[in-house]
Image 1 (cartoon, rainbow, N blue to C red):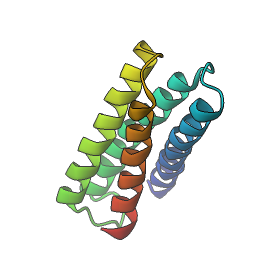
Image 2 (image 1 turned 120 degrees about the vertical axis):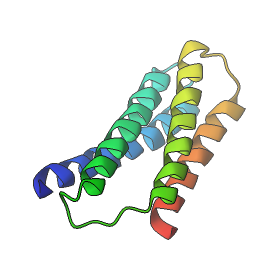
Image 3 (image 1 turned 60 degrees about the horizontal axis):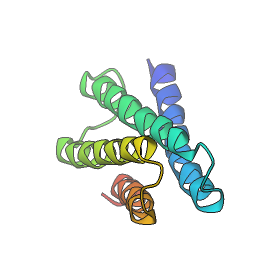
Image 4 (image 1 turned 90 degrees about the vertical axis):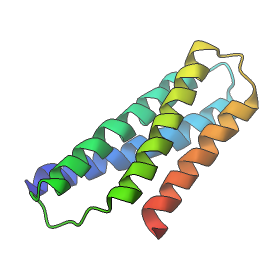
Length: 115
């Protein structure tokens, strides 16, 4: 099960990379399909995060789970997913929405590292 857990961690990190690259892509090329990149990254983050938490909570790997931290990260990740969906549906949305996605992504990374 450790291999599955490690693969999910890699996918989780790739989801974060997609979010960051989607923001950069949107800033450099506003007419690019960056909203789909953002949605894919946000969806990957939510799905793999839930799977990682489930595996760790079931005791299948030697990782402790802080449920409060996970709940906060899930709320932030779902907010990013919703905002990415809004940006996908309304491509003419302002840069404020994009900056909010970027800020919430950085907040989630900060929570993961420093909490």
